[in-house]
Image (cartoon, rainbow, N blue to C red; front, top):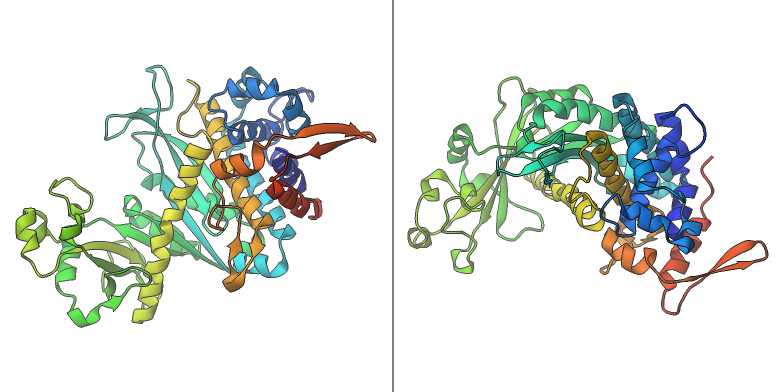
Length: 457
């Protein structure tokens, strides 16, 4: 954990969180709000899955020497998490925004300017299944699972979190999305708010309230549209000459059509993508409930596979409503290519679940589960901040990180290559030296880059 502790210290993460959240208890002794959240993130980064993992981590004498939050017990963390007020959970986002500003201040000028020039905010939810009838703040979703539902806004270019709520399984994210977008914008550093900001969301957010909120905030939006009957009628009027080849997607094309639902911004247009499907490669299922089959044209959707195979072409269609400039085919293809990378938010969810421990919610108290969610999201954000501050700049403005293919490393990879590295702590000259085994050059490299950064004032 030496590298993570150095990063937390350089970004002044605990101090900035505490300044934003304020005190959660009357006495000065003990742990602060920032220490509780960072301590939960630490435990999840080292691979602990439950609150009791804090006690296992606490029992690691050598690890506690390197920890930024030593001595945090599971009962203490749970008790302090229940002291957070609703306003203080909102203040967590303010503190994370201050950490983002600190990160930008430590980056090279060109890299920071590139991040702030174009900012993408992704909105999405994920379901976290829980067990136990007595857990509060959860509910059954449409699949019959009892779940909590983190609702998260992320900064796509940095792979970090800006704002989040913990909802129940029956909560619809659409009514909450405009407020979440506003909080995400407030959490952006001032230099990032001055650039071009764009919003991406899937068809679960197909509502005019979010589009109007984005318009009033000066944010361009691209929101997935449900495959409703009016859109299929519009598709039937698109000429074959209106299609333009998509970018980096074999057999895909895009087209633009006039479509502005009631109460949506007047500049709204419809961006359509079609992808040619190969039945010989099993790209269409015989099951009418399959996700891919639902993308087919209604005239083809109910046909059995042998009749579909007799057709000349079979396409899957997706619809996007947006106010981004689509005046030329090249711009439409670029907008669709950008929107297609909305799956980056899924990588953050995957990292928070499989790398950290957001795959379950450990407590019957909603406040403790909210703290656990923020611990996982902080762990994923720490991986994003580490990538931005220690990756190697390469050609084409690309950062070569610590992943197996030169990209940003997931938490599981960092845990194997950087965090859970066996080492020996040596007390020497009133200090502590970290002696590493052979073939662990990555920790030396990362520590050197982090220690070369100035401390956040």
